Image (cartoon, rainbow, N blue to C red; front, side, top):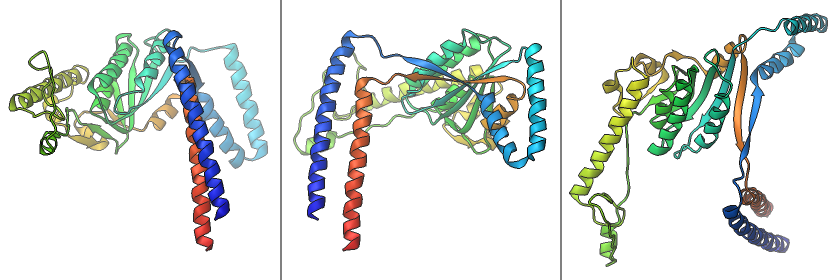
Length: 341
């Protein structure tokens, strides 16, 4: 146990030193960031046809006789050589991924990906968005949907694939697609608006704590966390929610015209099978099935704009990794000691 105590003391000193160094570096980087240029990032492009081809070839190596496989490779090489001499203009499919959180943070990468592909994409090409989001803040998902509108306005076909969930703000993005594909048990819909907040006024009053808030403008604040809420404030807050909901409904109706908006804009969600009946989606199909089929007739390019990590972020992740590994070791040693005793 003495060894473990010494080890734990050494580890805590090390962690303290690492945290101190990270804090100094963060402070320095923050000061420099104000004067310097943004860190920026770079666009990564992967051809998915090569990915599907490599998987097929790996499976063939295990299942097909060596002589047959050799002959097949010769035929493929001959076909590739002939195709190179007589090139054909195959359509292009640009594949984007959006994994949404409550703030729609992924829009920061998607906006650059869309800007890049629109420099080359034509109406003969296609954009496929693999979307997963349960929704979130109105302004964040409003911006994300507006980025997708850029694709439609450019005349480039947009297909949205939903494998798990596209609800609320996620569905507001999905409805931009000329075609929406859904897995049979994906969750879609939730065309509604919700807002909630606690109110601690009675608790503060009980402990004789005063809270003051000064505003200029009748509705600068409607409901608050610490102040005493009024019926007038509640009515105004509800009015704002209804206005936002109406805008949401009009937006969906504009891009999904076959949809009966009054039937589906209740805040409910539906699984893919039922969503197809409600015309929230056009077809039941996973993104894997759709892209694998498209790879037979088109060139598929997956785009990802990778943000360059800042110095504080890199050191923060490194420090977090060191701390988690160190604490895990101490925990394992202590558990081991207790077990053997």
